[in-house]
Image (cartoon, rainbow, N blue to C red; front, side):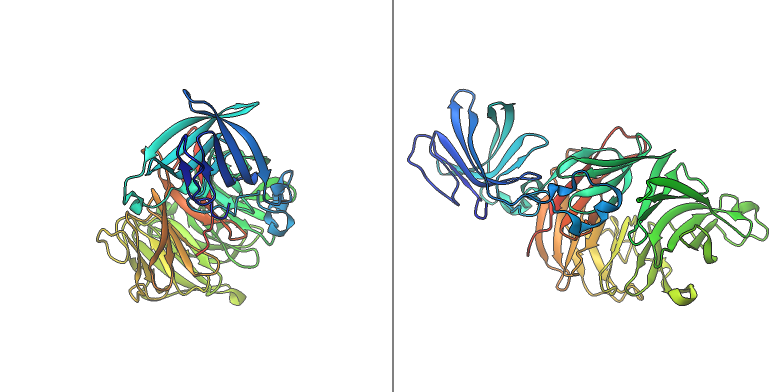
Length: 481
C-alpha cells in the first residue's frame, strides 16, 4: 500500500507498472488496497466480461495486523479508553492517491490510472459477493492541471449515513456518541465500521452535549429548551436531570462547556426575566458555574446575548460568544472566581459559528463566515490573542467562508473547513499544508470539525435540521506532514 498511487490501464499491452499497480488487459493488480475498517490488502482482479467491463476478485492477501476488534462489543466507559482497543485496520494507514474500497457502500475508488497515455479516475461497484464481482462504474479523464482543486476526501477517509444530530461526542478509534433527534436517543456508533454500541433512550430531542471523561458522564440540553440539565452516566447507563434554579430564577441551559473538577460552565436563559423585580439581566442571559450535582458553585453573572461557550483549561479562559461578539473571562478555580477581561466584550466578526483554542491557550481561531476581527467579508481565520483580539499573529486563508476549525493536539496544525473543503494549515507560519474536497452533494455542508480522543482521527458532522430524516458524518485519518 505504501506506493499505490496510480494504475496503468493498457488493455492488450505487456504488463506496465507504475507505483506497483498495473493492469495487463486481463488482470488488475492493486497492491496495498485499503479497506477502511477491514485492513490493507494485496488484491488481484481479473476482467471476465469485456462488454460490461466486469472484474472478479481472484486474490486478496491481508498485509495489516488486525486490531483488538476495533471496540466491537464495547460500550459506555470502555469507548473512552483508547488504550483498551485498536482502531479498525486500515483506518490510520490511508494515503492520498491510493485505491480505497469502502465496505459500507461496496465502492472501489482508483484516484489515478493511466490509459493510452492519459490519466483517468475510476470507480468500480461491487455487484456480487459470491463470487465477488465488480462493474466499472465511472471513468473520468483528469485534465492537465486539474489537480489544483485538491484530492478527494474519499482517498483518505470515508463517510457514514447516521441519525440526524445537532451535536456529537468524539470517542476513540472511530466511535462517537450521537444525539439522535429523530428517535430521541443517544447512540454509540463507529463511523468506520458502522458498528453500534449502546443506545440510550431519551425523553425528548437531544441538543448540545459535553463530556466529563474523569467522572464518565455526559451533560446535555434538550430541544425544545427546558429548565433541566440532563446527565448521562456512562457506567450505570442512566439519564438523570437537575432543575436549574437560583435566587428565584429558573434557567434553561443554552450552551455547555466542561470546566475543572467536574464543574460545568453554562450559558443560561431565564424565560421570565422581563417580569423580574429588579431586572438584573437586560436580556435574560447568565453565565453559570455548576457543580457535578447540578447546584451552583458561585453566583451567576448577567450577560448580554451569548449563544455559545468555550473553556480553555490551559490558561483557564472562559469564552462566551454569539454571531458577532466575543468576551473572555479569567477563571480562578480555587475561589470559583470569574473575572471579566476588560475590552474583550466587543464585535470581532460576523455570522461567527465556531471557536477553538490552541493547546497552549495562546491562540484563538474564531470561525466567522462573513468576516473575522472585522465585519468585512473574508475567507480567513484570524490568529487572535485571547486577551486582546486585535493583537493578531497572522491569518489562515481558506478558499471559502470558514465555518469550523480545530487545533491538533500537538498544536502544530489548524484544521478548518468552509463547508465544502477541508484545510490543513501550519499554525506558526499560517501556510496551507494540504486541502481536500469533501465530495458533498449540492445543498449539503459541514457543520463542525472535531478530533477523536486519541487525536488520530478527524470527525466532521454535516448540517442537519431538527426533525430531519437522516444525517451524515465524515471521518479521516490525520495526515502526516
